[in-house]
Length: 210
Image (tube, rainbow, N blue to C red; front, side):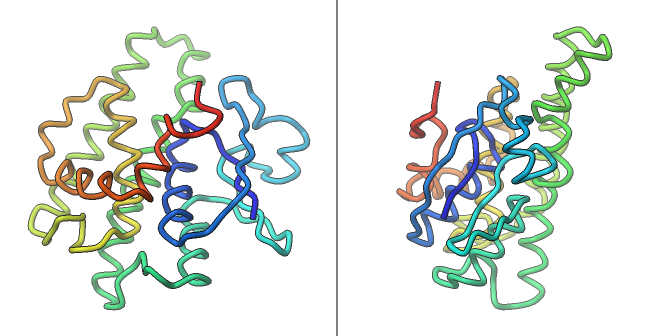
């Protein structure tokens, strides 16, 4: 398999964690987002959205969107499972994950912040926007899991929820968010980061890290 990504992309980070948890190897092909390499014609032929990650499987099929990729990995390599067997629990895990992957991360990512700058927003306001988005999303996520058993977001094993949470907390810190106000999320993060699959997927461990 080939994983197209960027070391600091939280969406690519999620997929790296999933690959590690599943014990799957992939050739990592970096595309420097700040240099616009994701907009090169060769990459747009792979992913017309011009986003990372994209995963090419061994048969040459291309998958995009991190949550879709992770669910495909979970279906084709079911151990360890990243979604609960119980349908209600599975829906709760997906809801938490999508609160991050659909409603928080996309509106504070590099592309959106660049557009805000193009529209004339001062850099201070751009940073304030990104921090606000993170606070809003993480506050909701803290409530979603406050009564869930730990140590992970939903019990004693990592799920799709944890794969989305850990990268997003990293984003929040970069934008100066005081994450100490989310003790339940921090407990889940600590449990996850103690696992080699999470630790080895961290941005600073990637060969393209700046």
